[in-house]
Image (cartoon, rainbow, N blue to C red):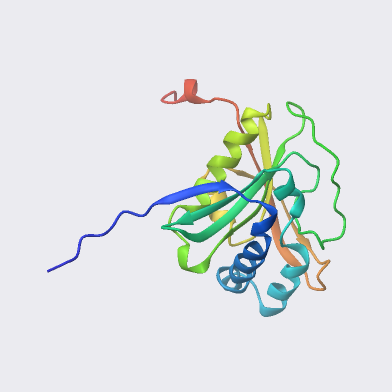
Length: 192
Protein backbone atom coordinates (compact mmCIF):
# COMPACT_ATOMS: atom_id res chain seq x y z
CA UNK A 1 0.00 0.00 0.00
CA UNK A 2 1.41 3.42 -0.98
CA UNK A 3 2.02 5.96 1.74
CA UNK A 4 0.37 9.33 1.37
CA UNK A 5 2.80 12.15 0.77
CA UNK A 6 3.06 14.59 3.65
CA UNK A 7 2.71 18.25 2.71
CA UNK A 8 5.95 20.21 2.82
CA UNK A 9 5.87 23.20 5.13
CA UNK A 10 7.97 26.19 4.10
CA UNK A 11 8.57 28.84 6.75
CA UNK A 12 10.65 31.97 6.53
CA UNK A 13 12.19 34.57 8.78
CA UNK A 14 14.81 37.28 8.61
CA UNK A 15 18.36 36.16 9.33
CA UNK A 16 20.26 37.48 12.34
CA UNK A 17 23.95 37.61 13.09
CA UNK A 18 23.60 34.33 15.02
CA UNK A 19 22.67 32.64 11.71
CA UNK A 20 25.91 33.54 9.92
CA UNK A 21 27.71 30.20 10.61
CA UNK A 22 24.71 28.31 9.15
CA UNK A 23 24.71 30.66 6.15
CA UNK A 24 28.37 29.86 5.45
CA UNK A 25 27.56 26.13 5.55
CA UNK A 26 24.57 26.30 3.20
CA UNK A 27 26.42 28.54 0.73
CA UNK A 28 29.40 26.20 0.68
CA UNK A 29 27.12 23.21 0.04
CA UNK A 30 25.28 25.04 -2.76
CA UNK A 31 28.50 26.14 -4.47
CA UNK A 32 30.06 22.68 -4.16
CA UNK A 33 26.87 20.85 -5.14
CA UNK A 34 24.32 22.20 -7.62
CA UNK A 35 26.55 24.93 -9.06
CA UNK A 36 29.24 22.38 -9.91
CA UNK A 37 27.02 20.92 -12.63
CA UNK A 38 27.32 24.22 -14.55
CA UNK A 39 30.97 25.07 -13.93
CA UNK A 40 34.40 23.48 -14.15
CA UNK A 41 36.15 22.60 -10.87
CA UNK A 42 38.40 25.67 -11.30
CA UNK A 43 35.34 27.92 -11.80
CA UNK A 44 33.70 26.46 -8.69
CA UNK A 45 36.77 27.36 -6.64
CA UNK A 46 36.90 30.83 -8.21
CA UNK A 47 33.21 31.27 -7.33
CA UNK A 48 34.10 31.16 -3.66
CA UNK A 49 35.93 34.50 -4.09
CA UNK A 50 32.97 36.24 -5.74
CA UNK A 51 30.15 34.65 -3.71
CA UNK A 52 29.39 34.22 -0.06
CA UNK A 53 27.87 35.71 3.06
CA UNK A 54 27.23 39.44 2.93
CA UNK A 55 26.77 40.42 6.56
CA UNK A 56 25.47 43.84 5.45
CA UNK A 57 22.29 42.14 4.22
CA UNK A 58 21.89 40.47 7.59
CA UNK A 59 22.43 43.70 9.53
CA UNK A 60 20.05 45.55 7.16
CA UNK A 61 17.43 42.86 7.95
CA UNK A 62 16.86 42.16 4.26
CA UNK A 63 18.09 38.57 4.25
CA UNK A 64 15.66 35.65 4.53
CA UNK A 65 16.10 32.09 5.76
CA UNK A 66 13.76 29.40 4.45
CA UNK A 67 13.12 26.25 6.45
CA UNK A 68 11.29 23.15 5.32
CA UNK A 69 9.89 21.11 8.17
CA UNK A 70 12.30 22.87 10.54
CA UNK A 71 15.48 22.31 8.47
CA UNK A 72 17.40 25.19 6.84
CA UNK A 73 16.65 24.78 3.12
CA UNK A 74 17.78 28.05 1.60
CA UNK A 75 18.60 31.69 2.02
CA UNK A 76 18.58 34.87 0.00
CA UNK A 77 17.79 38.50 0.23
CA UNK A 78 17.51 41.86 -1.34
CA UNK A 79 19.47 45.04 -0.93
CA UNK A 80 18.99 48.76 -1.00
CA UNK A 81 22.76 49.16 -1.53
CA UNK A 82 24.85 49.54 -4.71
CA UNK A 83 26.85 46.30 -4.33
CA UNK A 84 25.43 43.88 -6.92
CA UNK A 85 26.85 40.59 -5.66
CA UNK A 86 29.58 39.05 -3.57
CA UNK A 87 30.36 38.29 0.03
CA UNK A 88 32.13 40.20 2.77
CA UNK A 89 35.49 39.13 1.33
CA UNK A 90 34.75 40.08 -2.30
CA UNK A 91 36.68 43.13 -3.57
CA UNK A 92 34.84 46.09 -5.08
CA UNK A 93 31.92 46.37 -2.69
CA UNK A 94 29.99 49.68 -2.68
CA UNK A 95 27.74 49.98 0.40
CA UNK A 96 26.21 53.35 -0.57
CA UNK A 97 22.41 53.39 -0.65
CA UNK A 98 20.29 53.18 -3.78
CA UNK A 99 17.38 55.56 -4.40
CA UNK A 100 13.89 53.99 -4.44
CA UNK A 101 11.92 54.86 -7.58
CA UNK A 102 15.13 55.68 -9.47
CA UNK A 103 17.54 52.79 -8.90
CA UNK A 104 16.75 49.10 -9.06
CA UNK A 105 16.85 47.21 -5.77
CA UNK A 106 19.19 44.19 -5.80
CA UNK A 107 18.28 40.58 -5.22
CA UNK A 108 21.32 39.02 -3.63
CA UNK A 109 23.02 35.89 -2.37
CA UNK A 110 20.40 33.24 -3.05
CA UNK A 111 21.39 29.69 -2.16
CA UNK A 112 19.45 26.45 -1.80
CA UNK A 113 20.73 23.42 0.07
CA UNK A 114 21.33 20.59 -2.43
CA UNK A 115 18.74 18.32 -0.81
CA UNK A 116 16.04 20.99 -1.19
CA UNK A 117 16.46 22.04 -4.83
CA UNK A 118 13.31 22.16 -6.95
CA UNK A 119 11.04 22.40 -3.91
CA UNK A 120 9.95 26.04 -4.23
CA UNK A 121 12.69 27.54 -2.05
CA UNK A 122 14.08 29.88 -4.71
CA UNK A 123 10.66 31.06 -5.86
CA UNK A 124 9.65 31.79 -2.27
CA UNK A 125 12.79 33.87 -1.70
CA UNK A 126 12.33 35.78 -4.96
CA UNK A 127 8.73 36.59 -4.02
CA UNK A 128 9.66 37.73 -0.51
CA UNK A 129 12.44 39.95 -1.87
CA UNK A 130 10.27 41.50 -4.57
CA UNK A 131 7.49 42.28 -2.12
CA UNK A 132 9.88 43.81 0.43
CA UNK A 133 11.59 45.97 -2.23
CA UNK A 134 8.22 47.06 -3.63
CA UNK A 135 7.04 48.03 -0.13
CA UNK A 136 10.07 50.34 0.20
CA UNK A 137 9.26 52.15 -3.04
CA UNK A 138 11.42 50.29 -5.57
CA UNK A 139 9.81 49.83 -8.98
CA UNK A 140 12.55 47.58 -10.41
CA UNK A 141 14.89 44.85 -9.25
CA UNK A 142 18.11 43.55 -10.72
CA UNK A 143 20.31 40.61 -9.89
CA UNK A 144 23.44 38.86 -11.05
CA UNK A 145 22.72 35.20 -11.72
CA UNK A 146 24.97 32.21 -11.87
CA UNK A 147 24.35 29.76 -14.68
CA UNK A 148 22.62 27.53 -12.14
CA UNK A 149 20.26 30.30 -11.01
CA UNK A 150 19.40 31.70 -14.43
CA UNK A 151 16.53 29.24 -15.17
CA UNK A 152 14.78 30.13 -11.88
CA UNK A 153 15.00 33.84 -12.58
CA UNK A 154 13.79 33.47 -16.18
CA UNK A 155 10.82 31.46 -14.91
CA UNK A 156 10.18 34.26 -12.38
CA UNK A 157 9.93 36.90 -15.13
CA UNK A 158 13.48 38.26 -15.17
CA UNK A 159 15.01 39.32 -18.46
CA UNK A 160 18.65 39.26 -19.45
CA UNK A 161 20.45 42.61 -19.38
CA UNK A 162 23.97 41.40 -20.12
CA UNK A 163 26.28 38.42 -19.90
CA UNK A 164 29.75 38.84 -18.46
CA UNK A 165 32.45 36.95 -16.62
CA UNK A 166 34.08 37.72 -13.27
CA UNK A 167 37.71 36.65 -13.02
CA UNK A 168 38.52 38.09 -9.58
CA UNK A 169 38.82 34.52 -8.27
CA UNK A 170 41.59 33.72 -10.77
CA UNK A 171 39.37 32.01 -13.36
CA UNK A 172 36.53 33.56 -15.37
CA UNK A 173 33.12 32.63 -13.93
CA UNK A 174 30.17 33.25 -16.31
CA UNK A 175 27.35 35.40 -14.92
CA UNK A 176 24.28 37.15 -16.27
CA UNK A 177 22.79 40.44 -15.08
CA UNK A 178 18.99 40.28 -15.16
CA UNK A 179 16.15 42.64 -14.29
CA UNK A 180 12.43 42.86 -13.72
CA UNK A 181 9.83 45.57 -13.25
CA UNK A 182 7.90 45.53 -9.98
CA UNK A 183 5.13 47.72 -11.33
CA UNK A 184 1.68 46.19 -11.17
CA UNK A 185 0.98 44.57 -14.52
CA UNK A 186 -2.28 42.86 -13.48
CA UNK A 187 -4.22 45.31 -15.67
CA UNK A 188 -2.37 43.84 -18.66
CA UNK A 189 -3.30 40.25 -17.89
CA UNK A 190 -5.39 38.76 -20.66
CA UNK A 191 -4.62 41.52 -23.16
CA UNK A 192 -3.19 40.50 -26.52
